[in-house]
Length: 149
Ligand SMILES: [Zn+2]
Image 1: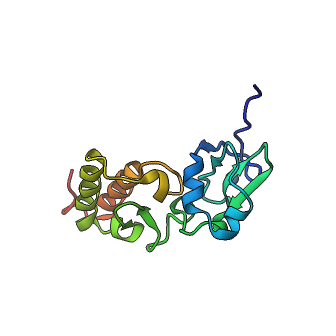
Image 2: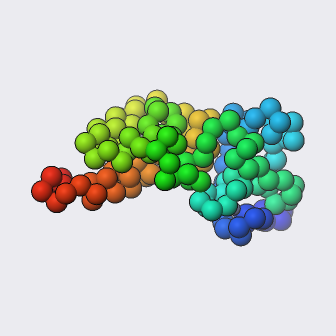
């Protein structure tokens, strides 16, 4: 068994393991026609156009091959989804008054095992970490008199 190369052929960053079903769910018809690699990896680097790669198969998929925008590539855009399962955007999470409630809503759903990250989120992973980061950022952006702990 040779070790699967894990570095993105474009940016050189380490790619995380992602399930084939994630690509099957999120690639466009054109992307699917190119074939889902056996051991796909996900590149979450913001500046890198590659979303999925498999260095063995020398195949890469960019955001244009996906049916959804990729949060990791557009974290500054208000309309990009952060939580793909329950529909929370980056813009909503920057609203300090709503961020905590939205994060809590998602946490409850995740706890109830209602999430579908594997087939909804391009990273194939739970979005809660991103939500928590955005919630903190929103709280910090508030005037200190209104900031919650
Ligand atoms: Zn990359």
